[in-house]
Image (cartoon, rainbow, N blue to C red; front, side):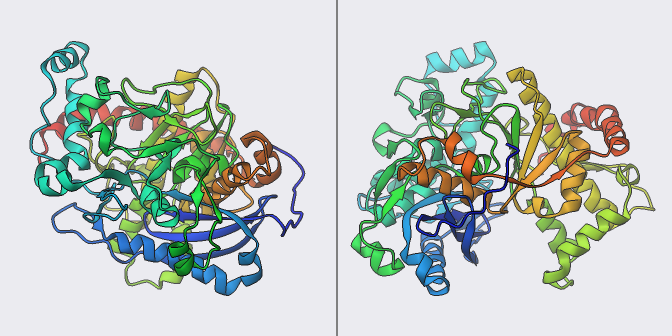
Amino acid sequence: MEKLPLVKNSIENIVMTIDCGTKGVRAILFDDFGNELGKSEIIYDGYYSKNFQWKEAPPEMFWDGLVGVIRIIREKHPELFNGIQGVTIACQRDIITVVDEKGEPLRDFISWLDRRTIKEPLKIPLPYELLFKLVGFNAFANSFNINTHAHWIKVNEPDIWKKAYKLVFLSTYLLTKLTGKIMDSRSATVGHVPFDYKNRKWCKKQDVKSQVLQIEPEKRYDLVESCEIIGYVTAEASQLTGLPVGLPIISSGTDKGCETLGVGAITPDIASVSLGTQATVEITTTKYIELFPFYPAFSAVQKDSYNPEITIYHGFWMVEWFINEFLSHEDPSAVYALLDSYLKETPVGANGLVHQPYWGREAYRPEARGSLIGLSEGHDKKHIYRAFIEGLGFGILEGIKVIESKTGTPIEAIGLSGGGSRSDDVAQIMADIFNRPVYRVQTFETTALGGAMATFIGLGRYESIREAETFMVRKSKTFKPDLKNAQKYAEIYNNIYKKLYGRLKPLYKKYKG
């Protein structure tokens, strides 16, 4: 991806990505050379919890936020706003509700951070139950079954489930509000739903996933391919947002899928590492690969391609937890500079403190918990913070090695994105732990950049992801590993970190708190 920087201003070609993350929503304008032209942001404040580890939000929080950021862009950049040729939406994954025939929600959204479960798995037909036991899939199936939020609605709110016309993700809901169509892209369909990621379609009634994730076929929304026009702005949406009636809305993908495009990770030798609320590592490959048995590679925004992914559910969410618990008295505008100073003041390995970043609901390790080992009287909050960052790095490195072993392709470089990538100190630690170069691209808004790429393809400006990447993505800074630090991290990873989960797993299974 090394090439001369393209910064040509092409104001006649402008698109807008709506990036709906976990913490807030942003509207970002891009031209067809990947230049960020304008941005607005609103932080969500409507999440609530009725019970321990529940997390919900009213639909109005998300829709009003989307309308709000578009209006701010219109006020700040009226000339650019009037030149917008198309819009796409890229959303956080696996946040669901159910809607009526008009697309209006029948209850609030349940967040992917919500930990509610049903008490017993929904009954699986006996032939499939016997098959699952035979192939060692039973525990995995039951875990997915009880953790599926749609099942919780089905069991605990049966009247609402009966009235429901469709089960939708957040992206589906927002697209419906803009276009009047209850539809979404295949690459945005990621979560606890019976979806065939390999063939990019809903599972058939007799498929295994349809037995585990029991969402009736009639409650599944219609699908379109990514990088296509999914609909047009309605008169009602136009009145609220100021977008012109008939403006094309282009399908793209999830926030993580678009991030992968935005850092130029479109071949298996380049990985995308997202240091966001969730921490993930994924690649793009034309071959369908399951990194773990029964766990799919997601359908990529790039057609006929897939994104095998390893997820650490609580990624930089842990940084927010750390700030709330240890630094709530500090000036919010200075807190991230303070965190960087902690990394500068502490040594590689945090003086023997090692963190395992499994704070709950890991797909492959559902019983796992977070742990800190090696605490002594000499440690303080600075060491804890460094151990958090290093533990995330080790967890991602573990994922990188799994991906390489399954694909047979060495990962040569890694594009960073997400809030954690803004820190040079964090980026350098990642380069040292991964022992390979990591880089940032010309914008921190990589989800929006990937969405813009898909939008320009949908509008016909570019013919393919590869062509769009050539003109729209460029490296801005590369961090090369420090060989001494890389060696120290390799010793910690191989001698301590890799052994932690196996040693602690029996204790995790006994813990019922």
